[in-house]
Length: 92
Ligand SMILES: C[C@H](O)[C@H](O)[C@H]1CNC2=NC(N)=NC(=O)C2=N1
Image (cartoon, rainbow, N blue to C red):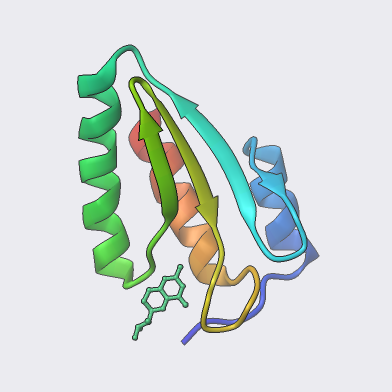
């Protein structure tokens, strides 16, 4: 189950560097090199699977573009916030 993200949750994402739109949040993660980027994606994928909540993302060399949205609800949910916080912690 997930619930629509309120303004408080949207502010948390925004303050953490995510660009928050009506129905999604976006962030560009830049790493030292490809191995760091792909290693982070591997860790983030495991966390996503645990949450049963999956990112839209793409990788070019050391950059990973991430968009989070909840397809089931057609907008941002608490699961997007949870995954964003996991991703940020793993990148720190
Ligand atoms: C059946 C399964 O729970 C759903 O398809 C899950 C899987 N991962 C998901 N990931 C995302 N980002 N949004 C969803 O709505 C979603 N739904």
